[in-house]
Length: 251
Image (cartoon, rainbow, N blue to C red):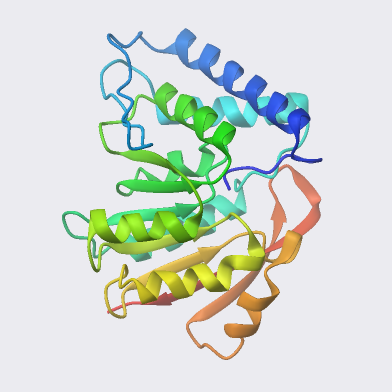
């Protein structure tokens, strides 16, 4: 997901994330003109963003990071993780065509969605209803163009089927797995089984492969020449190491 709370993911975690969202909204409101009219909410469970107003993705990203620095650590995919993520995204979406999308499994507060949408339309799947609501507010604060980032509520196994129906075959050129490491290998297989990626043209990056861990994904990719494991320091927590796995098959 976009971030992981250091501590349990119960009401305490939700309360802290809600405080983060309030902080982000206040920062964005102070630095950007207000947007006229309400954000469109769709009965399908997605949320679209409005491009009016002076809001900025950079402002929102900076606000999230400022909150982390002042209130305590969150497991953000920032720093060197963000650099690797953006490079992989550039590779995966460099050959994109009209209608192609980026998929994120695990949204949390939308930190990574904001980064990814700079390259193309993002469809992010999140199972926690509170995280869905909070992430939509964060994306609203970024004043994104309509369709730039949408959060879909539900499990990855269901959401990927929905994307197959809505986006069509071959529409996913980049996938970021950041939800539950023990299911990474299954969701990677689902992407292929549903023919969501074009043939030999998918870049996939998985986070938190060491902590909490994705042992089965690592086991499957141990002999793949196109897969690389990266040992990186956690953003704003240099004492902690984590791994990211990047696999690619480019035309």
